[in-house]
Length: 414
Image (cartoon, rainbow, N blue to C red):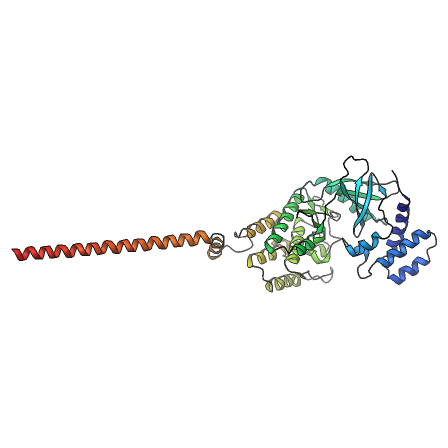
């Protein structure tokens, strides 16, 4: 295995930088000046990293941020190095615990690009556990809408890495929808695909736990791939299956309160993501476990939907999927996907009460031409019936009148 000199620079500078990232820029630079056991190239790279970071949006919290990535590309990174059997081509994304690169396998005849996730050097026990869990989870999942796992391991230098398929021209779901101006029906259909993929994951006893737009990528052909199963849980685990890590804007009540996750947790998060895709700026209020109020959460959802232009059925689907009481949500991801599918076909959904009026309205909406044609045909039949009836009645009247005249004439002749 070949490790270039910039690997050492990257390792040393990244490790120190990650210990300074939570400080302000001034404090980080001051702290850097007191570190004497590093070389000048390492110190120079750390200084560039600190200055490159927008302190309002720390680099280790950024995912697919092109502005930050472009700045970091100009600074020495792992590009050109070899990790395991993979040569790194370029940096493509930065996450809270990892750096993601485009790479290719050096010993393969066909140089197909892959995505190589290099884990943070300052690995905590929880982060390392998350890394191993993601490998285990992805190795169990083989679905067209879930990222494919290829390989994982650790280098001689102690760097943990994970290799998955590379998604060409990948964009987060929200960015893709905004760029292509996707309409509501198409948005719902894409979320339905995600729901069906997660149904498959749930059937394999896997909960994602963080179904936000950044973790749902779309390629140049519009195909969806769910990524980042790092904080996922196994549904068969009864202990340790609680939400210690979550994204506040999509977090379910059970995650906020640190309770056990279920498949309904993913239903809530995916529904929240759908709400944000349909209504911009509709992120759920952020709560801490101490201040969380379920009534305020539902009140907010009802207010947002009430002020929207979404039709009542779609609102009812979101309301059911976003119930703070998990027992009132859709029972499974399949049920959620089924209602989304039926909504796209203008069919009755389970989230709306099936009154006769509602069922007729849905039937009429789906079959306007048939209903109108049938009504017109019936009108023509009735019109024809009354026309024929009138004609027959007129003939009978004329016949009776003729018979009366004949009888009158015969009486006169007698």
